Image (tube, rainbow, N blue to C red):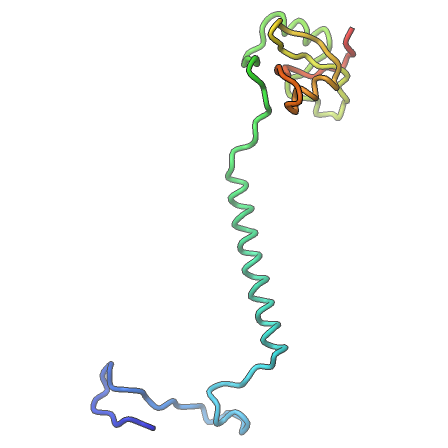
Length: 145
């Protein structure tokens, strides 16, 4: 049912829809063509995939903005190496940052309550992962003596 128009203003009532004349006969009485169930599922899948990709991109961006994780140093670690620490590091060929060439460490320097100690790499790894107390200072190429 059409309402009579009094004026052409904003609240003049519903307007008749004009359909393009070039529509096929099967679509002339409808607002738009009906989609099949398969088409609706495909469209929903594409929307879900797009939303997932946007969310993943946002999470990856947020993760790259997070500060890098710091290595656990424990309560006894200090920032600058002392003379005794420098001497041990030179004697056992040690590095505080690890070895970039893929070399396998054979020992480690730890800082305990009694001072610096050269221990096996396995014990140094346990300290690094938090399974043991103390602080890992450096990893070394030479075995402990």
